[in-house]
Amino acid sequence: MKLRHRTPALIFREAEGALLALQLLMAMTVQMMEQEKIKASPRRFVLRIRGAVVCAIATLGPRQLQRYEDALEQIHDESPNRRSSKVRRPWPRRKEHMPPKPPKLRRLTRKQIALMAKTLEAA
Image (cartoon, rainbow, N blue to C red):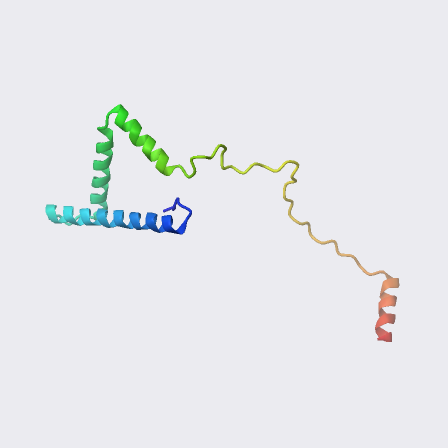
């Protein structure tokens, strides 16, 4: 689950609300299982609850549905003052990344070998 708030107090409140909703859903599932006295998977009951919620939304009138969708959009909107997309724009005149090439190995010349030997003897 992705938390949408930024401050610690609101994040704790959002997480607590999600946990309470989960506990309520679990309690409803257990209650339904006890009422029907059937050994079925809890997932089946969760799907039934989800179906009931979808049916309740489907029975809304056009105005009620529009208000519901507006409220959902307002809840899920991260920042209502955003005027541009969150997509990162490409830098102007930026070169694409090129992987490094293998190193070029060079050999010492005879002069360099002689100079190195002379320097090592002096040390």
